[in-house]
Image (cartoon, rainbow, N blue to C red; front, side, top):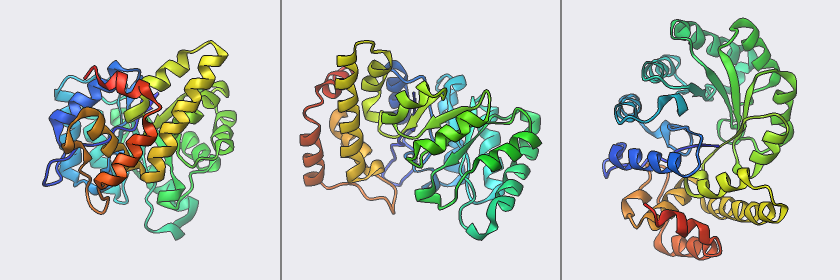
Length: 298
């Protein structure tokens, strides 16, 4: 289980590094095997290039275990992707999670292959481990098995995995079946068990910012009754937050559980949830008592 880490921000929408470091430490102490900052939930596409590179440096300087971190580095700009990727690799990151360039959608698979190839060529001296990022509901661009195969053949040992946030597990399974030693992650924690059972690597998920202890307990549960009860709670947390909005919902719940209103701030165009909406979400989550138990230890 990797958490797609939410980014707390200051009133001028800069990363709030002390809060972020504290949250990352909490995630690692409460069941996460690793961290994936600067993804969709981390609002990376709303942060400047300098904000992203300074965030990477700040997490490394804080002593977080970089061997357990996969940074989101992809963007529509080839040059920016290379710059952020180099910063992550220089910091000792385990891997790079790369969105496809999503603006010129007519480019097709050949265009995606050219883009990823140019990035890989510029990073080769640093021995990158690149994870492709399939999130078509946001990017409107699909990462296919064919594209992955071409990249893996052209750059052995570089394109090592995928985060599949498309919500169709058959798509994830196609990568697991096609490639040996391929780190295929699902983008939702309710799919983590199915992913692992199929030979994948688990999940990189947004709502584990809140539910990490529950997911960790589920992955270690052996009793069928315990598994079913935990599956129900995990699905409940995911659905309630996603129905509100994954980014603002996650941050608003964190603000309440941490008793820290600063956590609710999002970067426009994302909008913070109002108090009434957050009250409703917290009311729906009240049955998940383990959430309150685990956050009481902060």
